[in-house]
Image (cartoon, rainbow, N blue to C red; front, side, top):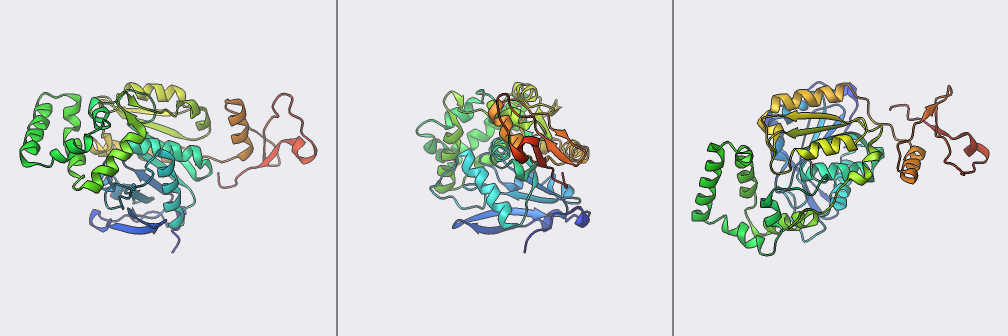
Length: 351
């Protein structure tokens, strides 16, 4: 049955044990996801090598007032791991199709790391389906990236990941993790979660999917792409950036760069957190996320405004007439005739 996402059904949240892993087949591949709660939809997108389980500390509380969907990306967790396209556009398409199967038209997107880049790509490809954007230690901003992930993109990385499953190597890696924690380094803060991600690659199919996903966005020099050239399109899209002040996986300097590139964005720095602030301080993360949703309105979508921004690479100020229509001023030299001459575009009444 289609999932209702109206505010009238809000207010009933489940216990953690009730948020079971479900499966739906989309385009012939099984997609795993967790879903709970009633209300406006919130889509939680995990990072590379991770799964929907990464949100376990925030999902039950968030589900008290929202329909929360946390998928396992294709190639991750309980989802199938085919030889397939693991690019950002493909993942964005997958998120659209899963929401479509579940009967959810629009959602607030919360993306962590790779999931943040997927969320940005989704908002770029399907702006009419995105209400808000929350980017947590997101990829897709600058080139800088931890050497660990850059090394994992090199030839032969599959064998290194396989070696980590050997008892002796696993013990040595665990000792390194403990040392990083005792030295109180940035990577030491994230070491338990990084080790958890490695442990989530139990077989060859999982490791191959991880490498294919990583190489789609990373090479030996760092991240291969950026969304900064399209950030002007976030004008009118409520956007919040959440970063750990001690993040060494995706350095916190990216937070400031993204903040100044996204008009009207909100920035939250968790000073003592690393790359997983929603796990290291879930109470604060829930507080800022709830406040952000409560104090912003879902983004309206205006096709004419979107077209004009694409043509001019500038945010467009939309004037509203007394009749309740958005008036987009014509570009210089652009002739308009008949009804188009008014520049009137119907506004969404639910915006």
